[in-house]
Length: 346
Length: 181
Image (cartoon, rainbow over all chains, first blue to last red; front, side):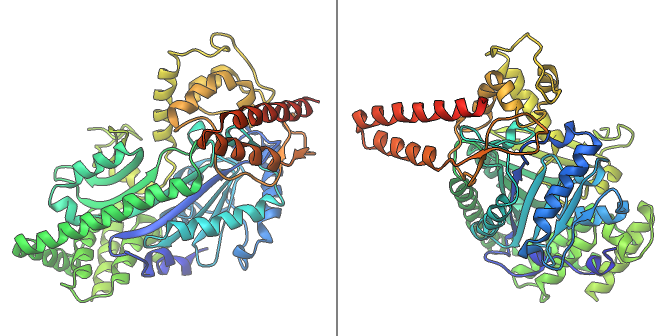
């Protein structure tokens, strides 16, 4: 399965969106549970089977999922599950746990529901660029549609009841993935991330050992889900994202003004390596693609930003194996990854 | 540094999370990081929230709830011990079973313990788990009254607010009574 899927990138990554040179994507998820059933981790086989049936019934007829079907996960090969993880359709937990569970996603991959993950339902939608309000509006409609067929576990005082109290209340997590190379190079990032955390938001990032933060991709999301309305929560994350866009733009301007030669050298070197590399691990690929992305977004390198985003997605281990239709070890994968990047940048 | 996941290989990837100025880190080897999909920013890393929550729970112990020290079991089979250890609840009804210890935890994690967001068109009446016929009630009356009460408080109409509060209490009591029967 998914051979065709793995060849291209998801719409939320390839399509331009508002501020998408800095805000890669906007995502909202809602945690929901069906009344009358124990939470997934405390469920027996029979309950799980029945629950998946109830949800399937409610979900299959929804317009958003026209042309898609609920996929039972225990039957899906691991590599296919990893591809869905890498495409942000599923969580890591949903890939590995072994209970009866399922997933459904829309044709454009922007909307998905994980069935029987940590909660009975995890509704999720992703769009490219900074579009949190739009995402929530669509997801809210889907939620209201499902509510007609499913009685959600809900309490008038504490809201939607979830397996973990960190999601109780609205069950909402709104997040943006941002690319902040300017703030990382100018070393302002630490201070800024710390400030964001003071506002009750969570920041996460990946970086490699030895050097400073290597891959300047970060995720900002809300921590609080109870005591504030969905609208307020979304607007808080949105406000911070807009501020980050502003800071990042200023940081890039200053960099190109004050240390142009150094920044340009860094970008062209990354481009040079990517075009000639013969073996590359995923971490290095992300780091170099991040530099290339900065080069493209700042107009230094003439290339389609979509192409760079696409490489970020298909360089992931599951995608590489899917694209070459074989299981590979790390070393083999690194060679194939290099081959793929060279070809696409030629 | 060893990988936090397999504890076998050298950690090469470091994931950092900052919450309320508190930074926590997970260190993974190449293999485990790849398995987790490095740029796949999963929003729901159970280990993180698990750790985070157990931190809250530790603090929560400073204010013991009424069921502290007594082993309570919900009808779904989930015990107070299970809850304290895992940070997870066993079923929707656990919210009522462990209410006393849960409320301070919710207060700590969130910005309050009262839901102000979306309300579904039907709300289940508190009932046994695995009871397939769901009895529901329409919450609109309560939500409307709560909005009126908030408005009255906001506009400092305290006499009205007191009246509304009493009405609300009566209504909630009635629904609660319905729930139990």
